[in-house]
Image (cartoon, rainbow, N blue to C red; front, top):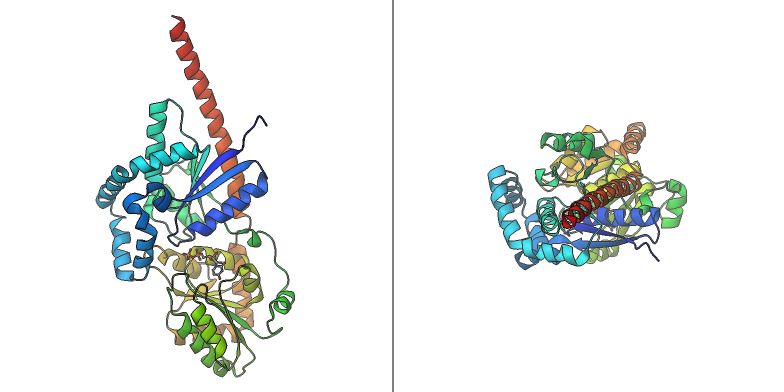
Length: 409
Ligand code: UDP
Protein backbone atom coordinates (compact mmCIF):
# COMPACT_ATOMS: atom_id res chain seq x y z
CA UNK A 1 0.00 0.00 0.00
CA UNK A 2 1.12 3.61 -0.48
CA UNK A 3 0.83 4.62 3.21
CA UNK A 4 3.18 2.77 5.51
CA UNK A 5 2.56 2.25 9.21
CA UNK A 6 3.42 4.97 11.70
CA UNK A 7 6.64 3.87 13.39
CA UNK A 8 6.48 4.46 17.14
CA UNK A 9 9.48 3.96 19.42
CA UNK A 10 8.64 3.65 23.13
CA UNK A 11 11.62 4.19 25.44
CA UNK A 12 11.16 2.25 28.66
CA UNK A 13 13.30 0.40 31.17
CA UNK A 14 12.80 -2.47 33.56
CA UNK A 15 13.51 -0.43 36.67
CA UNK A 16 10.21 -0.64 38.56
CA UNK A 17 8.07 2.47 38.86
CA UNK A 18 5.43 1.15 36.49
CA UNK A 19 7.42 2.02 33.35
CA UNK A 20 6.93 -1.33 31.67
CA UNK A 21 3.24 -1.55 32.59
CA UNK A 22 2.63 1.97 31.26
CA UNK A 23 4.48 1.17 28.04
CA UNK A 24 2.28 -1.92 27.55
CA UNK A 25 -0.86 0.12 28.25
CA UNK A 26 0.10 2.77 25.68
CA UNK A 27 0.92 0.14 23.09
CA UNK A 28 -2.51 -1.45 23.59
CA UNK A 29 -4.28 1.93 23.40
CA UNK A 30 -2.49 2.98 20.19
CA UNK A 31 -3.28 -0.35 18.55
CA UNK A 32 -6.86 -0.17 19.79
CA UNK A 33 -7.35 3.30 18.27
CA UNK A 34 -5.50 2.61 15.00
CA UNK A 35 -5.60 -1.14 14.38
CA UNK A 36 -3.02 -2.24 11.82
CA UNK A 37 -1.77 1.32 11.29
CA UNK A 38 0.97 1.65 13.87
CA UNK A 39 4.18 -0.27 14.29
CA UNK A 40 5.34 -0.05 17.90
CA UNK A 41 8.75 -0.99 19.27
CA UNK A 42 9.08 -0.91 23.06
CA UNK A 43 12.77 -0.94 23.94
CA UNK A 44 14.64 -0.99 27.22
CA UNK A 45 16.62 2.19 26.78
CA UNK A 46 19.50 1.22 29.06
CA UNK A 47 19.85 -2.41 28.06
CA UNK A 48 19.16 -2.23 24.33
CA UNK A 49 19.99 1.31 23.28
CA UNK A 50 22.59 2.86 25.52
CA UNK A 51 24.26 -0.53 26.17
CA UNK A 52 27.91 -0.69 27.24
CA UNK A 53 28.20 0.18 30.94
CA UNK A 54 24.49 1.08 31.03
CA UNK A 55 23.37 -2.45 30.24
CA UNK A 56 23.52 -3.18 33.96
CA UNK A 57 21.34 -0.23 34.92
CA UNK A 58 18.11 -2.22 35.61
CA UNK A 59 20.12 -4.78 37.64
CA UNK A 60 21.70 -1.95 39.63
CA UNK A 61 18.24 -0.53 40.20
CA UNK A 62 17.10 -3.85 41.68
CA UNK A 63 20.22 -3.88 43.85
CA UNK A 64 19.54 -0.34 45.07
CA UNK A 65 15.82 -0.93 45.58
CA UNK A 66 16.70 -3.44 48.29
CA UNK A 67 18.98 -0.93 50.03
CA UNK A 68 16.87 2.13 50.91
CA UNK A 69 19.67 4.32 52.29
CA UNK A 70 21.90 3.90 49.27
CA UNK A 71 18.85 4.33 47.06
CA UNK A 72 17.96 7.64 48.68
CA UNK A 73 21.50 8.90 48.29
CA UNK A 74 21.57 8.04 44.59
CA UNK A 75 18.15 9.59 44.06
CA UNK A 76 19.02 12.86 45.80
CA UNK A 77 22.43 12.94 44.12
CA UNK A 78 20.81 12.86 40.70
CA UNK A 79 18.43 15.63 41.78
CA UNK A 80 20.99 18.23 42.82
CA UNK A 81 21.65 20.37 39.69
CA UNK A 82 25.50 20.42 39.60
CA UNK A 83 25.71 16.67 40.15
CA UNK A 84 22.96 16.21 37.65
CA UNK A 85 24.88 18.17 35.05
CA UNK A 86 28.00 16.08 35.64
CA UNK A 87 26.08 12.79 35.57
CA UNK A 88 24.20 13.74 32.43
CA UNK A 89 27.40 14.88 30.76
CA UNK A 90 28.94 11.50 31.59
CA UNK A 91 25.87 9.63 30.31
CA UNK A 92 25.76 11.76 27.17
CA UNK A 93 29.39 11.23 26.23
CA UNK A 94 29.42 7.50 26.87
CA UNK A 95 26.00 6.53 25.57
CA UNK A 96 25.70 9.06 22.77
CA UNK A 97 27.06 6.91 19.96
CA UNK A 98 24.90 3.87 20.79
CA UNK A 99 21.71 5.85 21.21
CA UNK A 100 22.42 7.59 17.94
CA UNK A 101 22.80 4.33 15.99
CA UNK A 102 19.65 3.01 17.66
CA UNK A 103 17.59 6.01 16.49
CA UNK A 104 19.01 5.63 12.99
CA UNK A 105 18.18 1.92 13.05
CA UNK A 106 14.58 2.30 14.32
CA UNK A 107 13.78 5.39 12.16
CA UNK A 108 10.90 6.41 14.44
CA UNK A 109 8.14 8.76 13.22
CA UNK A 110 7.27 9.33 16.87
CA UNK A 111 9.18 8.78 20.12
CA UNK A 112 7.41 8.20 23.47
CA UNK A 113 9.43 8.23 26.69
CA UNK A 114 8.01 6.53 29.79
CA UNK A 115 11.20 6.80 31.83
CA UNK A 116 12.70 9.75 33.76
CA UNK A 117 16.29 9.12 32.75
CA UNK A 118 16.01 8.99 28.98
CA UNK A 119 14.60 12.41 28.07
CA UNK A 120 17.68 14.62 28.07
CA UNK A 121 19.92 12.24 26.18
CA UNK A 122 17.28 11.24 23.61
CA UNK A 123 16.35 14.81 22.77
CA UNK A 124 20.01 15.78 22.62
CA UNK A 125 20.79 12.99 20.14
CA UNK A 126 17.62 13.56 18.06
CA UNK A 127 18.35 17.29 17.78
CA UNK A 128 21.96 16.59 16.75
CA UNK A 129 20.84 14.17 14.05
CA UNK A 130 18.35 16.80 12.83
CA UNK A 131 21.05 19.48 12.68
CA UNK A 132 23.37 17.26 10.70
CA UNK A 133 20.84 15.82 8.25
CA UNK A 134 18.69 18.95 7.77
CA UNK A 135 15.69 16.69 8.50
CA UNK A 136 13.66 17.99 11.49
CA UNK A 137 13.50 15.60 14.44
CA UNK A 138 10.42 13.42 14.94
CA UNK A 139 7.81 14.34 17.56
CA UNK A 140 8.89 13.43 21.11
CA UNK A 141 6.51 13.10 24.06
CA UNK A 142 6.95 12.00 27.68
CA UNK A 143 4.41 10.06 29.76
CA UNK A 144 5.18 10.47 33.48
CA UNK A 145 4.53 7.31 35.51
CA UNK A 146 4.94 8.72 39.05
CA UNK A 147 1.70 9.60 40.82
CA UNK A 148 2.24 12.23 43.48
CA UNK A 149 5.64 13.70 42.70
CA UNK A 150 8.27 13.27 40.06
CA UNK A 151 12.03 13.44 39.68
CA UNK A 152 13.05 16.62 37.77
CA UNK A 153 14.67 14.52 35.03
CA UNK A 154 11.16 13.58 33.86
CA UNK A 155 10.66 17.09 32.49
CA UNK A 156 12.30 18.55 29.43
CA UNK A 157 11.27 21.82 27.82
CA UNK A 158 12.12 20.36 24.42
CA UNK A 159 9.47 17.62 24.63
CA UNK A 160 6.47 18.31 22.40
CA UNK A 161 4.10 17.20 25.18
CA UNK A 162 4.42 15.90 28.73
CA UNK A 163 1.50 13.81 30.05
CA UNK A 164 1.17 13.79 33.83
CA UNK A 165 -1.12 11.77 36.12
CA UNK A 166 -2.11 14.41 38.68
CA UNK A 167 -2.33 18.20 39.15
CA UNK A 168 0.56 17.98 41.66
CA UNK A 169 2.87 16.56 39.02
CA UNK A 170 1.66 19.22 36.56
CA UNK A 171 2.75 21.87 39.08
CA UNK A 172 6.20 20.25 39.30
CA UNK A 173 6.54 20.39 35.52
CA UNK A 174 5.55 24.04 35.64
CA UNK A 175 8.11 24.74 38.37
CA UNK A 176 11.02 23.34 36.36
CA UNK A 177 10.07 25.47 33.38
CA UNK A 178 7.96 23.34 31.06
CA UNK A 179 5.40 25.72 29.47
CA UNK A 180 1.82 24.95 30.58
CA UNK A 181 0.80 24.47 26.95
CA UNK A 182 3.17 21.49 26.81
CA UNK A 183 1.69 19.71 29.86
CA UNK A 184 -1.53 17.69 30.03
CA UNK A 185 -3.03 16.17 33.18
CA UNK A 186 -4.66 12.91 32.12
CA UNK A 187 -3.95 10.16 34.65
CA UNK A 188 -1.63 7.18 34.57
CA UNK A 189 -1.95 4.78 31.62
CA UNK A 190 -3.27 1.40 32.82
CA UNK A 191 -3.79 -1.91 31.04
CA UNK A 192 -6.86 -2.68 28.94
CA UNK A 193 -8.60 -4.78 31.64
CA UNK A 194 -9.02 -1.52 33.62
CA UNK A 195 -10.47 0.59 30.78
CA UNK A 196 -14.04 -0.62 31.23
CA UNK A 197 -16.24 -1.45 34.21
CA UNK A 198 -15.80 -4.80 35.96
CA UNK A 199 -18.46 -7.41 36.77
CA UNK A 200 -20.21 -7.27 40.14
CA UNK A 201 -18.42 -8.35 43.30
CA UNK A 202 -20.69 -11.38 43.75
CA UNK A 203 -20.24 -12.59 40.17
CA UNK A 204 -16.48 -12.18 40.41
CA UNK A 205 -16.25 -13.93 43.76
CA UNK A 206 -18.09 -16.91 42.36
CA UNK A 207 -15.83 -17.00 39.29
CA UNK A 208 -12.66 -16.68 41.38
CA UNK A 209 -13.64 -19.34 43.90
CA UNK A 210 -13.91 -16.89 46.81
CA UNK A 211 -16.38 -16.98 49.70
CA UNK A 212 -19.47 -15.05 48.53
CA UNK A 213 -20.00 -12.76 51.51
CA UNK A 214 -16.88 -12.76 53.72
CA UNK A 215 -14.82 -9.53 53.77
CA UNK A 216 -11.80 -9.88 51.48
CA UNK A 217 -8.33 -8.41 52.03
CA UNK A 218 -5.99 -8.45 49.01
CA UNK A 219 -2.23 -8.50 49.73
CA UNK A 220 0.12 -7.77 46.82
CA UNK A 221 3.84 -8.40 47.07
CA UNK A 222 6.46 -6.23 45.38
CA UNK A 223 7.91 -7.84 42.25
CA UNK A 224 11.53 -7.71 43.44
CA UNK A 225 10.82 -8.90 46.96
CA UNK A 226 10.51 -5.39 48.40
CA UNK A 227 8.13 -5.66 51.36
CA UNK A 228 7.65 -8.31 54.00
CA UNK A 229 4.72 -10.18 52.48
CA UNK A 230 4.97 -13.33 54.59
CA UNK A 231 4.92 -11.60 57.93
CA UNK A 232 2.05 -9.32 56.89
CA UNK A 233 0.03 -12.31 55.63
CA UNK A 234 0.57 -14.39 58.77
CA UNK A 235 -0.11 -11.48 61.13
CA UNK A 236 -3.37 -10.62 59.35
CA UNK A 237 -4.44 -14.28 59.31
CA UNK A 238 -3.85 -14.55 63.07
CA UNK A 239 -5.07 -11.20 64.30
CA UNK A 240 -7.99 -10.23 62.03
CA UNK A 241 -10.30 -13.11 63.06
CA UNK A 242 -9.62 -12.26 66.72
CA UNK A 243 -10.10 -8.52 66.30
CA UNK A 244 -13.29 -8.95 64.27
CA UNK A 245 -14.58 -11.78 66.44
CA UNK A 246 -15.16 -14.11 63.48
CA UNK A 247 -13.14 -16.36 61.15
CA UNK A 248 -15.56 -15.42 58.36
CA UNK A 249 -12.90 -13.60 56.38
CA UNK A 250 -10.72 -14.19 53.31
CA UNK A 251 -7.13 -13.23 52.57
CA UNK A 252 -5.88 -13.23 48.99
CA UNK A 253 -2.08 -13.18 48.89
CA UNK A 254 -0.53 -12.42 45.49
CA UNK A 255 3.05 -13.61 45.80
CA UNK A 256 4.11 -12.69 42.23
CA UNK A 257 7.29 -14.50 41.26
CA UNK A 258 7.79 -15.74 44.83
CA UNK A 259 6.33 -19.21 44.26
CA UNK A 260 8.06 -20.58 47.32
CA UNK A 261 6.00 -18.26 49.53
CA UNK A 262 2.79 -19.20 47.71
CA UNK A 263 3.47 -22.92 48.17
CA UNK A 264 4.34 -22.55 51.82
CA UNK A 265 1.20 -20.46 52.55
CA UNK A 266 -0.87 -23.08 50.70
CA UNK A 267 0.53 -25.93 52.79
CA UNK A 268 -0.36 -24.42 56.17
CA UNK A 269 -3.74 -24.29 57.92
CA UNK A 270 -5.18 -20.91 58.83
CA UNK A 271 -7.85 -19.41 61.06
CA UNK A 272 -9.48 -17.75 58.07
CA UNK A 273 -9.91 -18.53 54.37
CA UNK A 274 -6.49 -18.14 52.71
CA UNK A 275 -6.06 -17.83 48.92
CA UNK A 276 -2.34 -17.80 48.03
CA UNK A 277 -1.55 -17.03 44.39
CA UNK A 278 1.50 -16.61 42.15
CA UNK A 279 1.63 -13.96 39.44
CA UNK A 280 -1.92 -13.18 38.27
CA UNK A 281 -2.99 -11.85 34.87
CA UNK A 282 -6.47 -10.80 36.00
CA UNK A 283 -5.56 -8.18 38.61
CA UNK A 284 -8.66 -6.15 37.72
CA UNK A 285 -10.91 -9.02 38.83
CA UNK A 286 -9.10 -9.64 42.11
CA UNK A 287 -9.18 -5.92 42.92
CA UNK A 288 -12.88 -5.57 42.09
CA UNK A 289 -13.70 -8.65 44.18
CA UNK A 290 -11.85 -7.39 47.29
CA UNK A 291 -12.66 -4.86 50.03
CA UNK A 292 -9.18 -3.68 51.10
CA UNK A 293 -5.76 -3.83 49.45
CA UNK A 294 -2.32 -3.92 51.11
CA UNK A 295 0.58 -3.14 48.78
CA UNK A 296 3.87 -1.31 48.35
CA UNK A 297 3.56 2.15 46.81
CA UNK A 298 3.85 1.15 43.14
CA UNK A 299 2.18 3.79 40.94
CA UNK A 300 0.55 1.25 38.61
CA UNK A 301 -1.00 -0.77 41.41
CA UNK A 302 -2.31 2.38 43.13
CA UNK A 303 -3.82 3.77 39.92
CA UNK A 304 -5.52 0.43 39.23
CA UNK A 305 -6.91 0.16 42.77
CA UNK A 306 -8.38 3.67 42.45
CA UNK A 307 -10.23 2.65 39.30
CA UNK A 308 -11.65 -0.40 41.12
CA UNK A 309 -12.62 1.69 44.14
CA UNK A 310 -10.34 -0.27 46.48
CA UNK A 311 -9.22 1.47 49.72
CA UNK A 312 -5.56 0.73 50.37
CA UNK A 313 -2.99 0.29 53.11
CA UNK A 314 0.46 1.16 51.77
CA UNK A 315 2.97 -1.07 53.52
CA UNK A 316 6.26 0.03 51.95
CA UNK A 317 7.76 2.55 49.56
CA UNK A 318 11.07 3.31 47.92
CA UNK A 319 12.43 6.49 49.50
CA UNK A 320 12.45 9.31 47.00
CA UNK A 321 10.73 7.74 44.04
CA UNK A 322 7.63 6.34 45.77
CA UNK A 323 7.33 8.67 48.76
CA UNK A 324 5.04 11.04 46.91
CA UNK A 325 2.74 8.16 45.93
CA UNK A 326 2.11 7.57 49.63
CA UNK A 327 1.42 11.26 50.22
CA UNK A 328 -1.01 11.22 47.30
CA UNK A 329 -2.96 8.26 48.72
CA UNK A 330 -3.21 9.90 52.15
CA UNK A 331 -4.10 13.34 50.76
CA UNK A 332 -6.93 11.90 48.67
CA UNK A 333 -8.11 10.01 51.80
CA UNK A 334 -8.26 6.70 49.92
CA UNK A 335 -5.80 4.92 52.19
CA UNK A 336 -3.06 5.16 54.80
CA UNK A 337 0.56 4.18 55.29
CA UNK A 338 1.24 1.42 57.84
CA UNK A 339 4.46 -0.55 57.90
CA UNK A 340 4.35 -2.84 60.92
CA UNK A 341 2.20 -5.96 60.40
CA UNK A 342 0.41 -5.35 63.74
CA UNK A 343 -0.46 -1.80 62.66
CA UNK A 344 -1.67 -3.05 59.27
CA UNK A 345 -3.94 -5.58 61.03
CA UNK A 346 -5.27 -2.85 63.33
CA UNK A 347 -6.13 -0.56 60.40
CA UNK A 348 -7.74 -3.37 58.38
CA UNK A 349 -9.84 -4.44 61.40
CA UNK A 350 -10.96 -0.88 62.02
CA UNK A 351 -11.98 -0.37 58.39
CA UNK A 352 -13.82 -3.69 58.18
CA UNK A 353 -15.77 -2.92 61.34
CA UNK A 354 -16.91 0.42 59.90
CA UNK A 355 -18.46 -0.45 56.52
CA UNK A 356 -19.79 3.07 56.04
CA UNK A 357 -16.33 4.62 56.34
CA UNK A 358 -14.94 1.96 54.00
CA UNK A 359 -17.67 2.67 51.47
CA UNK A 360 -16.88 6.39 51.49
CA UNK A 361 -13.18 5.69 50.95
CA UNK A 362 -14.11 3.44 48.07
CA UNK A 363 -16.26 6.18 46.53
CA UNK A 364 -13.41 8.70 46.81
CA UNK A 365 -11.08 6.20 45.13
CA UNK A 366 -13.46 5.84 42.18
CA UNK A 367 -13.52 9.66 41.91
CA UNK A 368 -9.69 9.67 41.61
CA UNK A 369 -9.53 6.76 39.15
CA UNK A 370 -8.79 7.50 35.48
CA UNK A 371 -9.87 4.43 33.47
CA UNK A 372 -9.76 6.43 30.24
CA UNK A 373 -6.18 7.71 30.70
CA UNK A 374 -4.57 5.28 28.25
CA UNK A 375 -7.02 6.07 25.45
CA UNK A 376 -6.90 9.82 26.13
CA UNK A 377 -3.10 9.88 26.09
CA UNK A 378 -2.87 7.74 22.96
CA UNK A 379 -5.43 9.97 21.22
CA UNK A 380 -3.59 13.13 22.12
CA UNK A 381 -0.17 11.71 21.25
CA UNK A 382 -1.42 10.95 17.74
CA UNK A 383 -2.77 14.51 17.45
CA UNK A 384 0.51 16.04 18.65
CA UNK A 385 2.49 13.76 16.35
CA UNK A 386 0.38 14.69 13.32
CA UNK A 387 0.78 18.42 14.01
CA UNK A 388 4.53 18.10 14.41
CA UNK A 389 4.91 15.91 11.33
CA UNK A 390 2.90 18.44 9.26
CA UNK A 391 5.10 21.20 10.64
CA UNK A 392 8.19 19.20 9.66
CA UNK A 393 6.86 18.64 6.13
CA UNK A 394 6.20 22.37 5.74
CA UNK A 395 9.68 23.15 7.00
CA UNK A 396 11.31 20.66 4.62
CA UNK A 397 9.32 22.08 1.71
CA UNK A 398 10.50 25.59 2.63
CA UNK A 399 14.09 24.37 2.71
CA UNK A 400 13.66 22.60 -0.63
CA UNK A 401 12.40 25.81 -2.19
CA UNK A 402 15.32 27.80 -0.76
CA UNK A 403 17.74 25.21 -2.13
CA UNK A 404 16.01 25.14 -5.52
CA UNK A 405 16.13 28.95 -5.68
CA UNK A 406 19.85 29.09 -4.91
CA UNK A 407 20.63 26.37 -7.48
CA UNK A 408 18.69 28.35 -10.08
CA UNK A 409 20.85 31.45 -9.52
N1 UDP B 1 0.85 -7.10 38.67
C1 UDP B 1 0.11 -8.10 38.00
N2 UDP B 1 0.07 -9.36 38.53
C2 UDP B 1 0.72 -9.69 39.68
C3 UDP B 1 1.45 -8.69 40.35
C4 UDP B 1 1.50 -7.41 39.83
O1 UDP B 1 -0.50 -7.84 36.95
O2 UDP B 1 0.63 -10.86 40.08
C5 UDP B 1 0.89 -5.75 38.09
C6 UDP B 1 0.16 -4.70 38.89
O3 UDP B 1 -1.23 -4.82 38.71
C7 UDP B 1 0.78 -3.42 38.33
C8 UDP B 1 2.22 -3.85 38.01
O4 UDP B 1 2.21 -5.28 38.03
O5 UDP B 1 0.15 -3.04 37.13
C9 UDP B 1 3.23 -3.29 39.00
O6 UDP B 1 3.42 -1.92 38.74
P1 UDP B 1 3.67 -0.84 39.89
O7 UDP B 1 3.80 0.47 39.21
O8 UDP B 1 2.63 -0.94 40.93
O9 UDP B 1 5.01 -1.30 40.57
P2 UDP B 1 6.51 -1.40 40.00
O10 UDP B 1 6.48 -1.27 38.51
O11 UDP B 1 7.23 -0.28 40.67
O12 UDP B 1 6.95 -2.74 40.46
